[in-house]
Structure formats: C-alpha cells, structure tokens
Length: 268
Ligand SMILES: C[S@@+](CC[C@H](N)C(=O)[O-])C[C@H]1O[C@@H](n2cnc3c(N)ncnc32)[C@H](O)[C@@H]1O
Image (tube, rainbow, N blue to C red; front, side, top):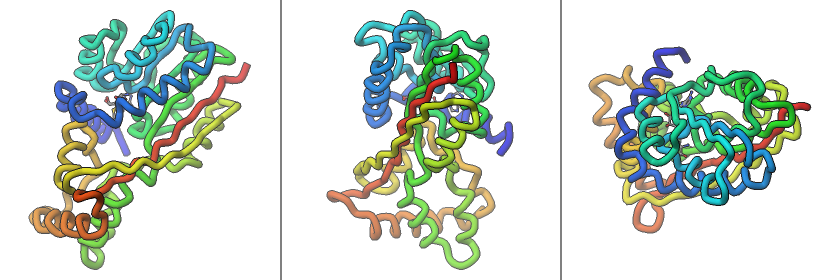
C-alpha cells in the first residue's frame, strides 16, 4: 500500500467529517471505554496526544473527569480536525500518526480510539508513538482487528464465482491481527504490553444499510473492487442476498467488530 491509498483514506474521512457523529454511536461507545482505561494511568493528567481524533469524541471523554494538562489531537483529515476544534478540542490539528509533528519525549500519554487500524504501516505508527513519549510514558487505546466484518468477506466470497473470488481479497481494508498489534508494539520498543480482543456484534436493518453507515463514517475505503467493472452491480445484488441469508439477526443482519484494546509503556 502506498501514499495514493493513504490519500484515498484521508479524502473519505474529509468527506464524512460534517456528518460523522450522526453515525458514530459505536465509536462513541468505544471512546468511553478507552477513556476509562486511560484514567487508570497517572500519566493521563499530563500532556496527552490523541491519534486519529476524528470529531473529538475521546478528547471530550477524557475532559469529563478533569482534563489532561494539555491535549493535542491529530487527524490525517483536516476536516475531521476542524470538526474536533468545533467540538471543544482547541489543539486539534491535521497530522499523520505515522509521521507525528511532535517533539521526541514531549508527551506523558498517547491515546487513540478506532483509528490505528487505518495505519498503512502499524509498526511505524507504534515507533512514532514511542518516539514522542517520555520514558515511562503510556500508550493506550483501541483499534479494529482482522475479524472485523468477517461476515462481509464470507458473503462476498460466496457471491463471487470461481476465480473471481480472488478479487475479494482486495475488497476490504486489511485490519491487523491481534498478534500483529502485540508484535508492532514490542518491535517499537514498548514493554508491559497488554492487548485484549473483544468481539462486538451490531445489528443493522439490512446489508445495504450497513454499507451506507460505513460510507457515512468515511470507513468504506478499500484497496479496490475496481477490476470488476460492469459486473459490479450484479455482484452487489448477489452479495446482499448472501449476506441476508447467512447472517440474519433480530429482523435485520449482524456485523462483528473485533476491538483490540491495548496499553503499553515506553521503556524508562
Ligand atoms: C473511525 S474514525 C475514529 C475517530 C475517533 N477517534 C472516534 O473514536 O470517533 C478514524 C479516524 O482516523 C483518522 N486516520 C486514519 N488514518 C490516520 C493516520 N494515518 N493518522 C491520523 N489519523 C488517521 C481518520 O481520518 C478518522 O478520522
């Protein structure tokens, strides 16, 4: 994956920034859980950076029980950072988690909620987090793991006949496996790594409604189904059929989110 792919991700979030919060109930729920975990560390009272802040949900949660002394929120999407400023996070700026515009050792804590799964190179993002933390500083957050939306992969594979199913691989943004998260944090020099995975099932009225929500959130970017060309519409119909047949749930359909919660400390 390359810079062009990263630009595609940024643009999708730029486009969704204005209406992001309307569809982000699940993201708000996870931000609350991440804030709760962050409050378990003394470092939360110091200088904190929120990577991939979106509209600022995590920063607002952290501020509820006494704000960090300083909160810098960064998002690769300038429109999202603007939205966070409008939502009361004054130091929300455009910035890439894989190349942080922050000084070495300048922070007590780095937090992030449901953003790092978008990193093109997770180990690089982990190294950047380690670089900007002081010795003993804490990284904590959550990101989506590989099992996320596994139902979509099954339905798409079944909707595609024969060799076309190979294309299904490029149809989804690759999310990291649990071991990759642990591995990236270890390789970046963190210790006391604690990672736990949690599967959450959500109900949607229908498979198209599910995909619509992903689009509203800006989370629809994938390496591409472009090669399917004219066959795409037919394929989508078959995909929706398969999804409804295989994954019915409470009068609608279900989708699984694998949330990987992680914490780690920079070596002293
Ligand atoms: C699903 S949203 C989560 C936003 C927010 N943390 C929340 O919980 O509502 C993911 C965010 O990560 C941002 N993002 C994606 N790749 C990024 C990167 N490399 N650096 C910084 N932000 C990134 C996106 O622009 C988007 O705003």
